Length: 76
Image (cartoon, rainbow, N blue to C red):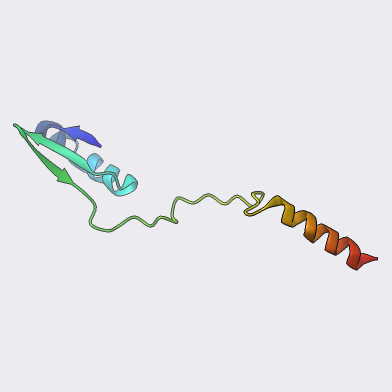
């Protein structure tokens, strides 16, 4: 989490707000000995950052051997 001063916040308010909205990572503003936190209200969509991996096998690779054997038997 990034910590900025009020002066940095004032100088870069729009850039920092855009950064919070894009990354969903809060920013803390340190004023004296106290911290304030700017956070997005909406929860991020966990599936938004998923990357498609069509070549990845989920499960036991041995199941594929069984499927291949069944297909080969069906062709005969």
